[in-house]
Length: 331
Image (cartoon, helix red, strand yellow):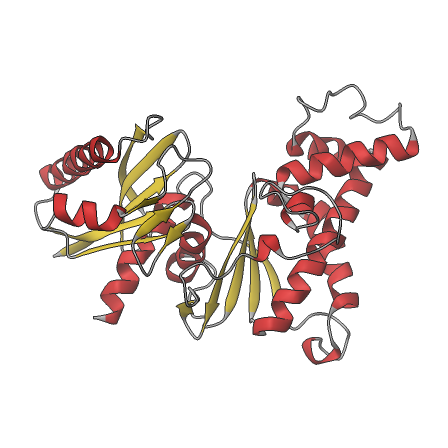
């Protein structure tokens, strides 16, 4: 009998739902709107309906299928309590007991688990991606924000209250840029997609770079991918933007390496599409921030710095589904 897990990724606008095989293949998927009115009960009903339709479609093709459960990735998710707590980009108010409500609606599911989206990505890397066979690594997700998941001895680190692993909110520059969380100087405000854009504009202003390929873009219109395109064409501001971003990211990653001594650090998200434009300055800067204990004899970091092997389009669903396989592993 084939075993299948469901993965649910709750975003601010849409909720993606898919069935995932044990090798990480997404078999079928759908999406529903994430409520804008905060109506949790109607949302649970919509999830149940979508899940049932996916399973029925799946079993019509192969009846010899066992659905083990549901894994969910969501902002401000507490694995220990199965709750979403005060998520700033969701309409739900306060603490939402999502897992309890889903278990009540779908008692046939063997497992229903919840964690934040960056933790889910780390589990996805562990179960399906480049982290297979590793016991200790860290996942950085670079996008609108900077998230992270920490794997130690083969398990995700949740911490006492369920919210461990916020490397994106490492204090990078005291008194620096305002982060999306409201605190000044966090890593996220420098190394997210928005942070890369802010760096580009700061550099254009500093150098009065009217000749930059980025100079005609407004702050509202410029995106991180535009910086990549300009850098690939040799634009000095764009190249300097990646050098600065790589240096900032190296400082945060150095702290993470000092804390957990991982075998590898994986990077996932849109900015990684820049490839060596980001990775080369990151690796070069990382060596100067690490203690000698964490470097090889040639001065390079012992920890490998790798691009995630998760497929970008399905990574959120696949990562969430990994929660189910971890629960099955425990039992």
